[in-house]
Image (cartoon, rainbow, N blue to C red; front, side):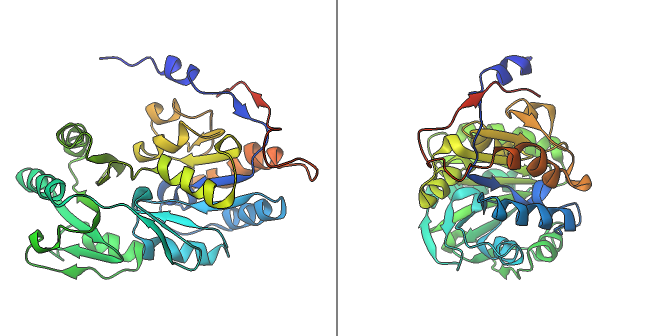
Length: 301
């Protein structure tokens, strides 16, 4: 079935003229392929602060994987981990947490095992794996600076799981499982790829749209004055509800259709470009109230 991407884009609400909060994805968005913050990104984040625009981070990463970026950018705002399944204060205190049912965990892990996709569990601040030598474990460990806990069997740990992650180099398989597991666990879980090689399974309400709303609520800001920026299918729930949705240049055409505008790639300071071109010009005026004065304009690519 062919999807009319122009029609999808045309359904978006008009872009906000005032932005008070940016909710940003991390991998593929805030950081480059080297998983580092570039000088341009750091400078743009500082410019947001000077302009009175708050910045909150949201990621499929576990909380310990997000915290270093909160610290590096000197943020004093809450952040969300596990695709929104966990919302934390800037100090790392858990403000809210959504977990999968034990039956959903069992069904999802069984499906991943059948297709030989390596599964990981995230419970609280712990990352559980069965095979520490599996292809993507070392990569993830280097990226998030977190050592996994090795367990022989996941069954004793199904209670309290915030996220199941499947990792595989078979990208088409993960794309198919995104649909199949999503259908199997409809009403129980949210299933999205956070990269070509990672499939995330979280509580049905644990998505980045939920996270963006929760973070905005913590700061007393209406979603109509929130800009969201991301690059993957798990970012779509927040792009669709943002006052200003921004897709990275490295995002697929399907993802870009869900955003008001597109920016440069994450390997070419696309995040900093987006802040300079789309967000900072929409900084609130000193005399504007936080609600009720936002005007909108038509989206354009």
